[in-house]
Length: 186
Image 1 (cartoon, rainbow, N blue to C red):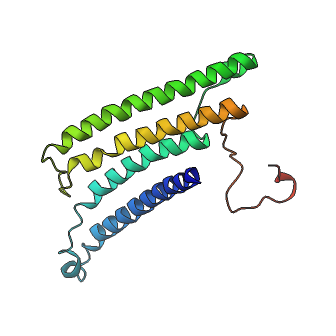
Image 2: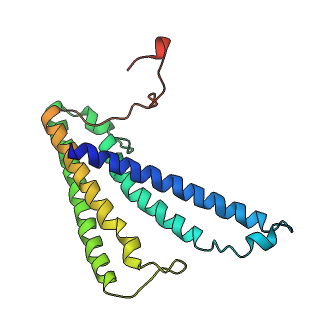
Image 3: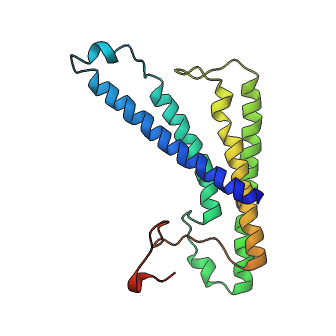
C-alpha cells in the first residue's frame, strides 16, 4: 500500500513538474513576443517574468532526478546486456544482482554527499540569482532523488531475487489505448 502511494507520488511529481515548466516557459515566450505589440505594451511591460527561466531550470533538474528513480522502477533505462544475456542463468543472476547493488551503492553515496552539501549550504544565506530562493532548497533534489533511486535499485534487486524477473518496458503499449486485431499481443 505504501509502495503504491510512493509510486503515485513519484509519477504525479514528475508529471506536475514537466507540465508546469512547459506552461511557464510557454507563457514567458508568449509574453516576450506580445510585449512587442504596440497596443499590448502598456499592459504587458509591467509584468516581470525574469524568474521564469530560472524556475524552469530547477523544475527540470528536479524532474530528471525523480525521473531517474522512476526509470529504475519501470525498467526504461537504456542498458547494454548482450554479454550478460550470453551467460549461463546462475551467473547471469549473480551479475545482474551485482549490477543492481552497485547502482544502489553509487546512488547511496551520491545521496549522502548531496545531503552533506545541502546541510552545509543551509548554514549559509546563499540564494538563487533571480528568485532569491534559499540555494539549499534547489539542491535538495540531489539527496532526495538519489536516495529514492537507491531505494528503487534495492526494490528491483529484491523483486529479481525472489521472482527472477526484472522490470521491463513494453514499447508497443500505450496506457489508455487498446490494441485491436493481430497487434493485440501483450
